[in-house]
Image 1 (cartoon, rainbow, N blue to C red):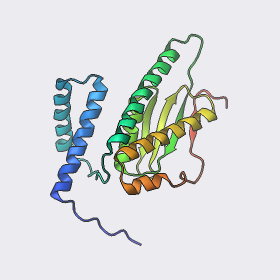
Image 2 (image 1 turned 90 degrees about the vertical axis):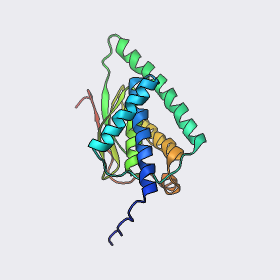
Image 3 (image 1 turned 120 degrees about the horizontal axis):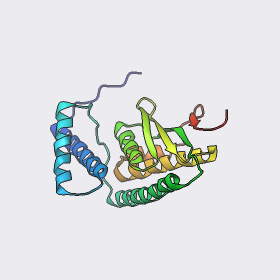
Image 4 (image 1 turned 30 degrees about the horizontal axis):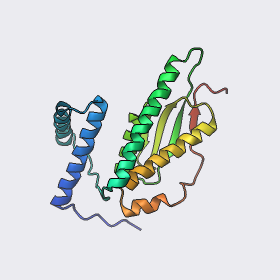
Length: 201
C-alpha cells in the first residue's frame, strides 16, 4: 500500500518550523561556546541564517508541542549529566596506570523522526565521554563512541540511558503519537552491534 502524498505546508507552518530550527541551532551554538553572552547569541543567529539560506535542509516538521514542566526536567537532568560526565572523564584523564577502554554502541531509538534523531544525537554529543559517529536515518539508529565502558553490562546500561534521554526529549517537545510510541516494547530484531575496544579476541 502506497503512502498518500503529504499536503503542502502552509506559510504559518513553514515559519514555525524555521523558528524552531533557528532556536535549536542558536542553542547548540551557545552550548558549544560554553558561555551565554549576547555576542554568542547574535553570532549564533548569523550562523543559523547562513546555514538555512546557503545549505537548505529537508523540512523537519515540528509536530509536537513544548511542555514547560517536562522541558525543565530535561534541562535539569541534562545539566546534571554534564557535571557527572565531566568529573568521570577528568578522573580517567588523571588516573595513573589505567588504560581507558571504549566501545562503539548502536542504539535504536523508538521514535524515528528527523527531529528526535537530531535532538538526541546533539544531547549525547554535548555530554563529555560520548560522541556520535553515525546516525542511520532509515532505522533510527545512533552509533555512539563511549569511553569508560568495559563490560556488556555497562553497554546495556548506556543503552538504557540513551533511551531514557529520548523519553525525556519526547516528553518535553514530542507529539501525542510520539509519546504513545514510547509505551511500545523496545525494537525487536537481531542484537544491536557493539565493538568493545581493547577487549580480548
